[in-house]
Image 1 (spheres, rainbow, N blue to C red):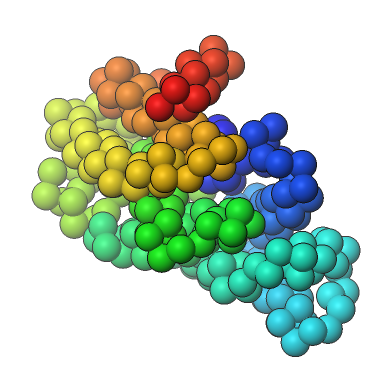
Image 2: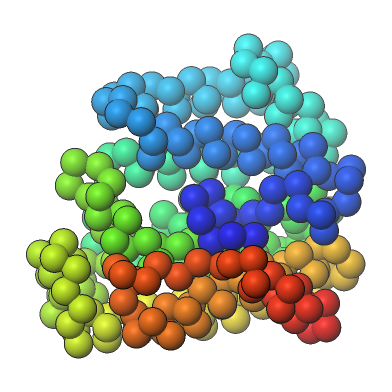
Length: 272
């Protein structure tokens, strides 16, 4: 799993049973294409929202037992029926993508977590349903892991997000920026001040703690899904380690997982 673009779940991973790969591929196609409406191209905001409304209409058709009109949703409907997947996570994703079009600042950490609840957590929940492991405890741990992964993505992409949309997106909570003495102008100028490093250190440490608070999920689930989750956690933690290693200078050294990272990540997952 790379922590990049629509990164919060594996795509037909070799660790996934072959019987589940069509479902994961269909979910990914839905999420990736809807996410692109929010992030890619030059369409006006109103048109992007209309496209996402079209996706909601297709989900409505599935919910009413009607045949979808778009091939993407026809394939998705087959998998939803085959695995008894709930529709709520799909609607939550669309709400998050719509929010990305109209909202580019977050007043507080709680507000940011609410966004993560809809932008990231649905993927983990759908995977647990695919594996018939969607207990209340597992869902809670999955939410922590997925929210942490979304936060990791935000912290590695602070500079990239500044170039998105008319004003740029800033996912760093506004109240915490003020508390650490970091202004938007400092972000735009890519100033690596002691204040910015302290702010990023705080975000990294909190995100690591959130990830570890859900890590029991990877140990509680056996077989491929347990190993997959442990590898996902290890990947997110590795990115946080790299943010620390570059002195929090994510403007000049965007941390990513490289080919050389993967053998270690999977060995750690296998023997955890």
